[in-house]
Length: 281
Length: 208
Image 1 (tube, chains in turn orange, green):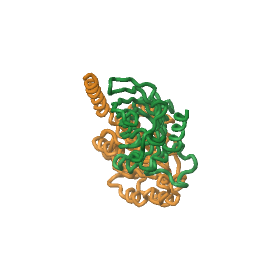
Image 2 (tube, chains in turn purple, orange; image 1 turned 90 degrees about the vertical axis):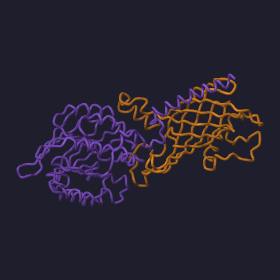
Image 3 (cartoon, chains in turn red, green; image 1 turned 180 degrees about the horizontal axis):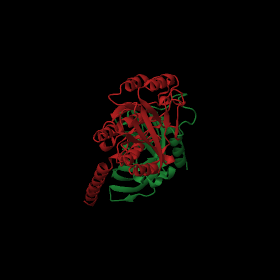
């Protein structure tokens, strides 16, 4: 009698323990570090942020101010400090992150960053970086954030985000998707200026050099292009490396404890103008 | 000494990988008592712990059942990871204490050890000349980690061969090299919590 009653009480205890573990800690039950299952609140974040942005429209003709940063990979303390700093900034509509959300392309890493960025009071949007594509990271990024190439219009500005991580596709000649980019930048969808953002800048050796001429020409011919934004290099810079009138702005990584506030408007000739302000946090 | 050392060395160095390639789940029908040293001691069925949605395997035990070497082959379907993954894991476990809980039950409150896993089927695994040397300093398909857990064992009648015949349920909390690096580097230990980097595996072990 004693053993069987011991057994049933242990069994009950085990069942209770197993049930509580299963319900409270589903994320602990990880099938693989490449497994991207997770809470619904941390999926489809691009669309969720676009919805938030759409809920706070900018009146036509208004100057746009947004935060530009990149390369949050493994700098979790810095993400928290950045969020606290950005939340203090008045008159900023959104934040854009130029890729490398994660370091190892793991879903957990992307969620660790997303959980912290979700504390921003403004919407934020990301483009995929090369580190986000390591292993099965591309699938994790799509699950947690969303599409690899996408665009949206906010106020008078069209944003075009494009995957330029050619090395992660072993330079297959299709990344970046230049025909897609051409179609995007040629149609302003009513916007009066546009911004292109990608992770790897076209002057970098991780960019498919067979596509560099087509890519840079596409940008040079893009109507009302204010500039292209990049990450990857972990140091801020601004210039016109192709001497074709297109300004390329690189972000510092999160570890440099700085970000840019970009102010964007159109002048009397309806040409896009911008001003950059570096903020340390 | 031969009983202790030979199986330990042979099993970890030779038998484990060799058996992992054949079909380890099928016990050899020709086996007679006393069992040859290379015959696995137990069968394993596990979920999660970074070793597969389902993982099955075999294991050996040495040093009066206190040390085990387990070989697992796990499976993750495409819908959970972006590609179908198969994961081969070698796990070493040490169990310092066994607590009897009655005639039929015993508890091993502490079981711990290292593991190494290799994942096949990763989307972007790196092709020749894709990356310059050292472009990424970490492996995309090989993880090393540690597990720490416990086990509850139900003792069934001893087999005619004199071997014990037990079924155990276990849990293992674990982590891997990349999660540990995330936790400790850049002063991030202030930012991530230990819970962030833990995984949980649940499984059954049946001696046969």
